Length: 218
Image (cartoon, rainbow, N blue to C red):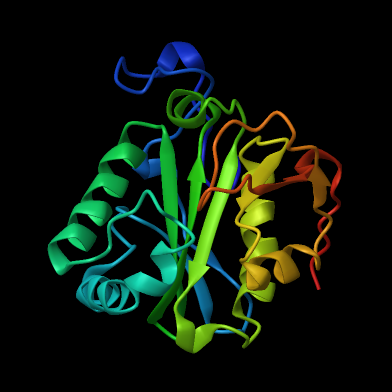
């Protein structure tokens, strides 16, 4: 039993969930409380994820979308409707078992998001057969140690559901992200075979070997 609950066996999966590997439904997702920090990671789409926070998250994501979208060129956060479409799509694709998202809240206020993509969807979209993690914080929370607390909890969660290795694909100009990754046991790997580009440049690629990391509770 991991943080997500009981892992499904391939033969137990419904046809719409039976992709490549073992995936999880919304019922398996559980929130993560980061000690006494006031930081909570809540699965997008699960019953406990949003309630009164949902409209605030939509509004903030729309208003700050231009700062976030420059590092996620495939997203359209230019209008309130496009943000709602993105959120709805994230919920649907989570239910299908190809990707899941966690919203970061600080003292019950939405602060950012983790997006975890399965090897199957990455192979289909960008020809990259690995688990990947994307993440962002709203500007007000940058530089305040939020991600330093939230990231290890998310990595532990991923390890507990059986992910051995998670990759990060980072724009060269995203210095905040690069500085954050440098704080953790995350190694840069060879990207010479990378066929996709970000803003016309080949991104930097990092790998975190979850299977060999010993997470200790303090």
